[in-house]
Length: 156
Image (tube, rainbow, N blue to C red):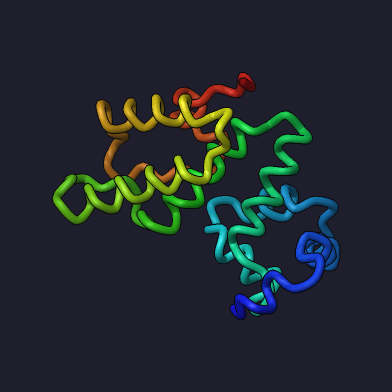
């Protein structure tokens, strides 16, 4: 990806043009057709040379805010991060390496979370650390039962 081309012109219009070219009326519909696919991979599919994962993230958040589904968006982001960084699921043993990877995923999740939901994400992170999921747990979408328990669909 060329950073120079990524931010040239109206990148949001370019993003939506690519989504429509693929037969979707929203970025959310495009992403939902690709559950658990990392954000950078979604961006590559839309334009390897001129679309960045952060642009996809921003577009998805904008749509979620309009639909009042930010909590679902937050869960979806975690699913995509877990898929990218823990492709075999939650580690059976938290040794130094896997503990670092889990911490990295949870930190990225928090950084990608809008301010309105950060406290709820901090609570969810604490719950995951206090009572880790079963080894191999790999949510396939934002409606995963454990994720819905950690972050129910009530908007804040």
